[in-house]
Length: 281
Image 1 (cartoon, rainbow, N blue to C red):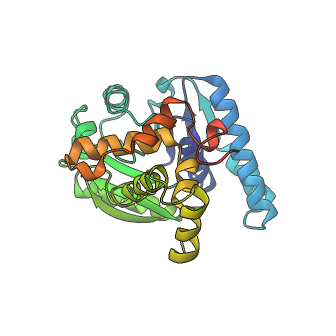
Image 2 (cartoon, helix red, strand yellow):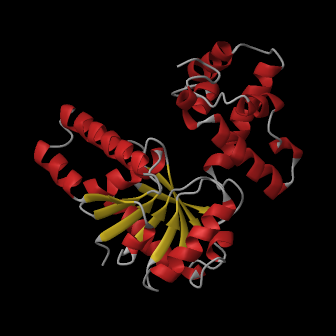
């Protein structure tokens, strides 16, 4: 029976994941090494829940109850008794592997360890533990409280039972689980990132301005936002990291990151979070 959930990493994705678990009746411990990040996450969650109350999608008492189920900590030692874990730290294979090794020794052997990675191999993460059958990918979409998709990734050794438990958990959260194979980028980013990359190439080559490229995709293809606006929203550093995983993992030159993307990341122009990307914020 899953009652307490640990979420590691209190960035944009981590705090959104913690929020949906807390809203769905789970006791949640959100862990991050930096206390200021945890403080910011709590404020973000409070604001998000306030919007739900404003739109009458949540009662004030439900909001208060959700906040009451959320606690924070600066050490994973607080997660020793958790029934289920979601890792949402930086998109870096070595950092994730080291964390999974630690979680493996810390938690009860039957506990499922899931990763919110958007591109890194679940098989690779599972191999860093003594329970690869209980390691799965659970890739939420941003913004987590609003987006219904969760991409479920089965590693080479992930058991059918672990997939079933995690998929049922998604349904409890009001999400729709869709299974994807453990290949670089899974489904979402395998298709999305080459589109974003191609839009950046088109801009670099002067085919169109950022505004023109985005307008063609929103007005002509009915996308809710253009690829360059979306890249700014995701973070250009994250886009670059995923494209590198795709290029290295599949080896096809069609996944090579656009030089303009590399240049912008090198300049610290990361999109919305830095105040400057393809647009100014």
